[in-house]
Amino acid sequence: MAYGERITVKTRRELERMREAARHVGEILLELRELAKPGVTTAELDRAAERSIERRGVVSSFKGYGPHGLPQYPASVCISVNEEIVHGIPGPRVLEDGDILSLDFGVSVDGWHGDSAVTLPIGVGSSLGSGGLQIPCRGGESFFVRLRALRSGSSGGGTAARFRRS
Image (cartoon, rainbow, N blue to C red; front, top):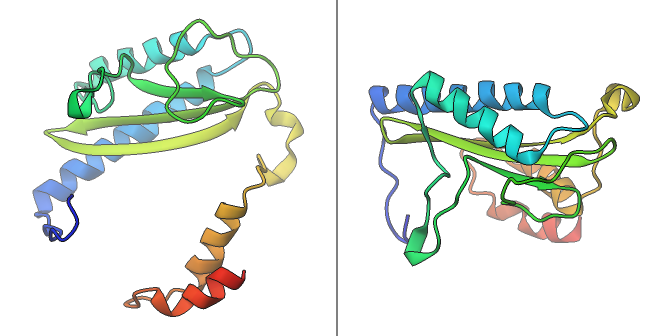
């Protein structure tokens, strides 16, 4: 959406399609999480996602996407391991015990998109304890400080000074 454009109010049917797309995304990410183990390649995860997309009759939001004349994205999932930045392309990389895997995934239903991302440990899940995967991130902490300060109906501008001090 370009700056200054209005947000279009969605119809009940449009919202249902968006929810359906998001449900497929969540379920497929759960499938990929179960498959993501030491010895599996990132290309194998992408192929599993493609099979699930085909079985469900939905469309990948990522594969073939190439805005503004850029090369088209060749995969259905963006997969990044460890130090790799977001939107990595799946390939022959083999997951190893202790890797940190990020999966970014989206599908569309009748042109309405669902999109989500998860980050998970490979092969070390049982040693994480009840706290789960803890990744230090000052930006994430700041987000939650700001989120707690917001109230329904507020613009959030009143928390800007506190946010900068946090």
